[in-house]
Image (cartoon, rainbow, N blue to C red):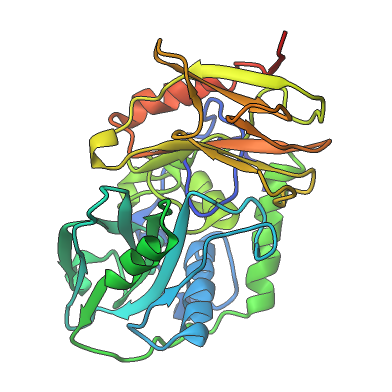
Length: 356
């Protein structure tokens, strides 16, 4: 599985990699993507994404009945369950039967903070994103395959935790059918082994992948190599027009005092709730400090279109880091996906320096 590609674009959750030029021109075969897993229960390159999706669907169904929400708590150093957790938002999850139609709604959020439902089908395509104040109805005709969608809802954490939790609980699923999802029959150990091989391509063999060609809304948005690897590295990631992220901050890793970085504010749809942040992790990519995260609201606005973030400093806009740390810049609601990719390419060239 040694193929050369690149990953940009955020998402859940979230695994991250360095951004650079995509070297794969392989195009996804739509028939391959929509291949029925029942025809080949052995996990292969042709059905891995469906097997990975089936794996996630099964986990959700074990956690909650069909059409029922699972509302997560804000991530902290103590309750984290996955590496490189996202501290920007709280997640709400559900598996929904749309065989007879289902409507998904989010009321207006009074404080204007970002809230969205990402509706993912059985082929790992994002068929719809519903924002606060919106609703959408899906049937099987709206999907690239199957009768089910996985909701990955994100609610930006506000200063008022009770408001955040109330916003989570305000989201509505109205499904006309509640038939439980039937697992396709893949062996979970085989799915995990195949996933680990794909991850090894990236983490050990330095494969470069492009999230913009892996996370898509339809088959023509992706190519096969990226489609496979982003599902392994970060299943459920948003397509790039909704969110993007970096894998690193140049110069990360030192625990020296008074480090700093200054960079240009990204061009996001702030009126609709777009925002950006930096999250830091320890050498093993786990949250290792209480003060590990900084949203744009706490960064220093320099008044010239740039912001500043410090590391291991006494300023109000500093985060704490340890030896070997790594970090990521996350950006929500780019005004222009292509321009944001270029912005990220520039950001990862800006080094951390020592304050004078």
